[in-house]
Length: 350
Image (cartoon, rainbow, N blue to C red; front, top):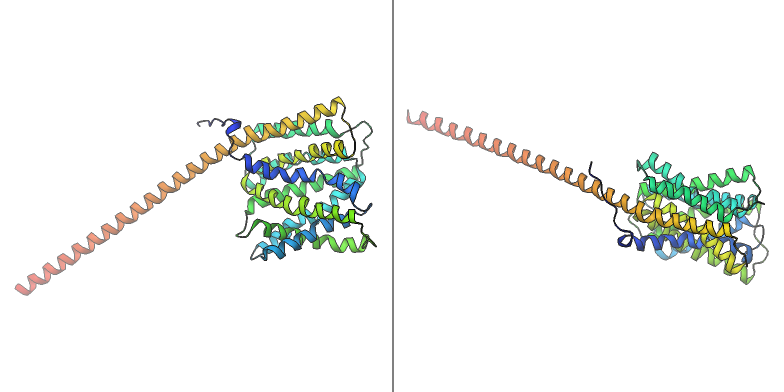
């Protein structure tokens, strides 16, 4: 089998797709700062509901498109995985785990997506992508974990479930493709379904706040519009244009931005090991996207060309065979008619 050389990183054709997709985890990295400084304390379900439901309803009102056919249940499933289940589990884990532990567990999502892609999409990740995922997780661990980090088994289990659910959403979105509808409309369907799933639990367990300050409203607006509606639209776009493992590797941007936001807004500092972890995670992110994605794209193009060529040959052979059969039948019919006419003429002459 001929090998396909990887294109140079500088000529990577999906740089725009990578940048737009990376916008999503970059904004998610600011969630911790916004939550701790601008939102009401101890209101995880309220934050999850107001992050998803208003944004979904606004997108529905703007696009004026509803799901159709199988996209009713597909949107409900993706809404559950991305928002309805993921958001509450994420906030639950955040209350039981230090941020470093949660970030480290979340960084294993590329490995989960690789396994799910192999099982569901029959896509085998390259060794470079798998190595980048492992190295990236190690970098995030150095960046975020501290010696004082406590280990809560329930919190770790919940965070693993949340990470797996979002990884499954990435793979299913890739498998099902995108319907014939605007990207914002598709995002609005999922947000609305997810928000409606969380809302009853919010009303029962937390209730509505008596008052909301202007700072609270700004925080909720930022998370709902910038960090959810626009972010998930770009995220879904990236899933359609990139491989699932490439998209999930971009999730490493989340803890990187979260760390930088902590330095800028919360006056946090990094020691030498955390600085090394930041560099390792960033290097793994870049390595996994350039070489791995380029090779995956080249192999995909080669397979697509081979399949297209095989299909073209099969169609050509089928058309040629059909034409040959039609010509043979026409000739046989013409011969029968000529013989019949000759016999009739001979009988008349006799």
